[in-house]
Image (cartoon, rainbow, N blue to C red; front, side):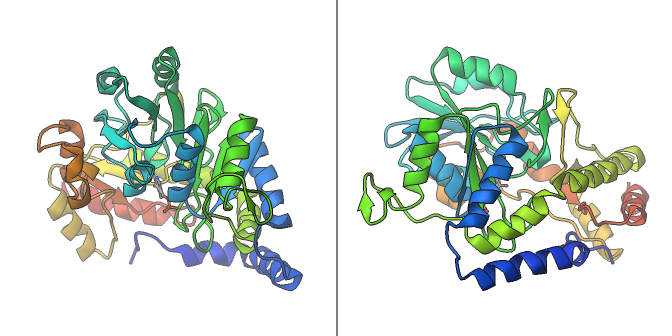
Length: 362
Ligand SMILES: *Cc1c(COP(=O)(O)O)cnc(C)c1O
């Protein structure tokens, strides 16, 4: 049996560190926006080489709050991709803005920069490049196109903690960036959590107000805000895990390299030369996906599809107005993508067994 994912294995490797960190918080009696959150924010900002990091309640809320901080609202358009977690588009729509979808490249499955300019209108306020499956989008041309038109860039880094683009970590390129700490992400909490990073002090200050009722001082709302806070327990857990992130990402890269070396007759994910993927997911393409899934299942191997329905094909988002065939590359990926088991604690023999089972089939 090789399950698609197993979070218990990671906890076993860091149990004493986690247990100490959580016990410390429980004994402290302080649970919201305290010393652990402050320390995590400092460490997370340093890890990215940026000035400011702010913990929030989830990745969805990180995107939502970052957009509000950028001034995005009703009447604006925000460009992103159709193959992302629904959260990216849900967060855009929560601001009252409209999501505009740009198709992706078949090889990297990331935003196709060649099609980006066509998606821009006078209403375009921001672009959200999604660093999907752990790999950075091609940020230089995206930033060039955006800056020439005074369009803001929010990096969706929910799947790319530690991934690099031209030698620097993603999240440090755009005006602002959003992270998720959902348990299965490369850096995952034991519950919900998220963060926003930026080098812009004014944006950081707006995020700080928005995440807690618009309070500059307690009980005095300067602006209209909400409640979206990272809690002390999750921050303490994330501080422990941040110390292991680079080693875990290196393990993921090793597993991915082995898969890519061994797999035959399916299309492996392509790593582009400008950076290093952290392989949040290892996503192959197969024209015979359904039979491949059944074959792997019969061998006790778990797989998953990220995501089974592109955003514009989901009932809630038919309002976006993209009919069948309007985003053809994403729609082909919808039929062919398949995620194989890949997490740091997976044994190399398991990677070999999965690759062998795939190769037997095709
Ligand atoms: C997970 C994810 C999110 C949302 O994060 P949550 O913490 O689950 O709200 C946003 N964007 C992408 C690309 C994601 O993978």
